[in-house]
Length: 261
Image (spheres, rainbow, N blue to C red):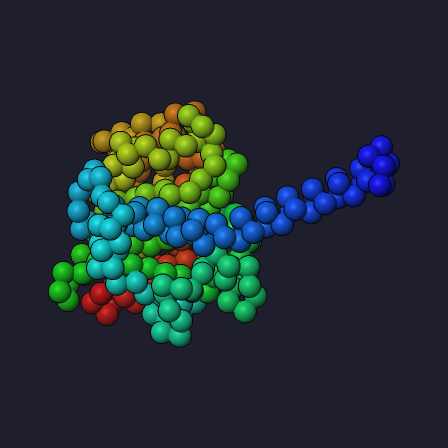
């Protein structure tokens, strides 16, 4: 075929595109399991850091993270029933996928959807930290809409199921230098010791509009504002209020507490 032939040029371009497409597809398929393992490891690193099993400041190896994570008691919770669910394996049940599957999810009533989620999985994975038979902490997954992204995190509660032991955000795409202040260790440290519910069982926790006044009766339920990130801070308040509210974990926590943990 003549090298100047338009047909030859079309064939060469098409063949090149086909080969590149195949290579990209093969690479994506091959790397996907590796990427998923890396994502799971990073998520588990955040869980271990707030578990109380070790100093959050410690730089742990992947092997140490895996070993510590295995010491946690992962359980699936049926939020509608407020009880543990033994139907599925908590290590393999994907709550994100479940949220988009009508079989495993529910629509969030508009008047309760303060976190802007629309739907949630019926089942959520929680992590129990025990010393023998005694509950030390419980770690709950929480997420909700911020300024630009869905913010995903884990909230660790003390054994009274009302005092915040620690908090960690592991995935977000908020404005760099502003909204992503939710990742700052010094800001997250201010959550420790704050309370979620008042004496009537109402969720009172929120991110304040400025610095928290230590003398205020609301100080026990508030964390200092994020400078210049009021929308992100409001999103954090809303995701906590949703997941600790009546359509989230509140029913389960009440029953779990009544049962003695």
